Image (cartoon, rainbow, N blue to C red; front, side, top):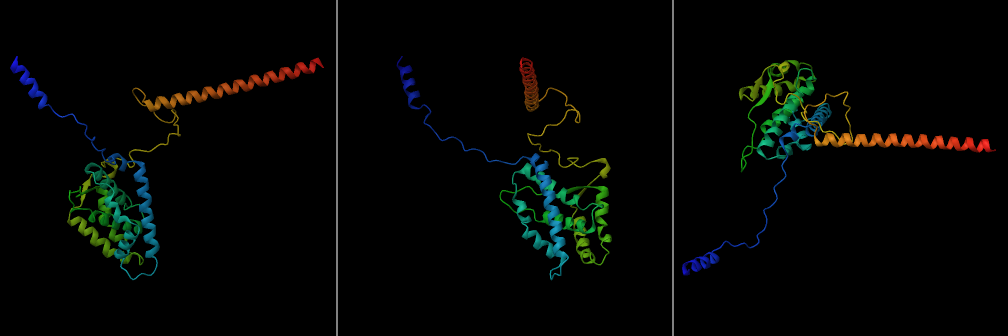
Length: 271
């Protein structure tokens, strides 16, 4: 009996303290990888690349003391493109960010684009690739290879031959130097031809942002298999409610019209 009382007293004295403690801090908001493959980022970056090409064309067509690539770097810095490397630091999201950004630059260097557009897109790809943050603590993800279809790679490596006009001739040495360095350092990861759709994701944007007010017709799009999602159920319920309300309004208008017509006829007969 005495030992049991001693044991209880000892346990009360050495019990864990239950004093109130501050709660854990809330986690940081991180952009998910799907953001960079969505229409929100892809469309905005495509517009920015088009603006970069247009701005460089405007300045390049005027007399300049700077060389073609030095002029491009000045426009790159003036438009704030160097800050794009600091957009995201999370490993998975940064990988998607770099992959999509490199791909969109290469997208404007295909054979169907104008030679000047292809040149500026190559300058942008080269500058963005070699300005990645490599010496950082903690270390950040750095892209070592950029995937490219085989037919696109062949056309890109022969791009210097297309710069034969007097206006494009000053750009040719810079293009050939960049292509030689990219090939020497094996920057490109060559995939099968474009017709086989080996890029991942297959098309950009992969996710398309749709406003809540837009309602797609079921006749134009294919019906999804399985049980409908909660969002689809809500849209159908709102559609049914609005249709019911419109039908009720039409019936009410028809009833009021009939009543007014009958009352007018009754008044006319009474007269």
